[in-house]
Picture (cartoon, rainbow, N blue to C red):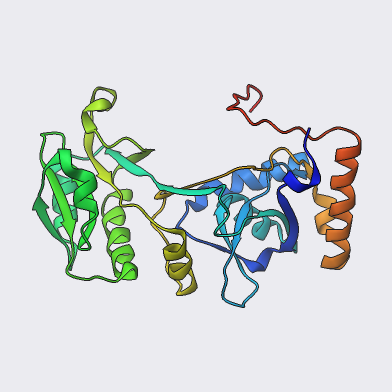
Length: 280
């Protein structure tokens, strides 16, 4: 059980008010569109952060494909969980890319061709310290044990993101990649017989990403990992309510009534402990 003070902030917003923060795979949208249409509900709401720029826009930090699915469906409104950028339950960390399917030399040469970027040998045991340097964009670990600091003379965060996007683009279409938070390439090397390398991303701050999005810049795909506690899941909110010819104010009032009904019928459960779900 929970009480109203603990509840996540749920709101219905115009779909057009939501902006993404990183590039995404458009091929993932059609299956999600079909899933939403066949179920007739929005199961898990996207999580958004106010843009803090007086535009009444919200940055999507989780649920990009659900957002684009709603855009494809032509629905005017979407149910979201709103989280303030300084919410103590909101955390941001970086994903690293396990790259495989191209030769390590091809990967390296593709990165070396990027303008305004230099590769400097560095110590694999000092990755965290290397990434703290204001000129470091990322670190590349190679299967042969070589480690490179990907550096630029440019200092602005937006320039770093532009170059980091070029780094990811240099292999995204030619290789396969998986996300990981590990930084030791040897810990999973045996799982990837065609391992090309491990790209280790720097740490990001939420205010930096908000600034980038406000200026029309996207983060590289699969580079950010947001977590929020508490998080609203399995709402199964009916699409017909979101598609109805009613004002936004009416829909939000209806949403609050629906939440109160869930509380009164004891359909709402709060789990403070780590939980494994077996019906996903």
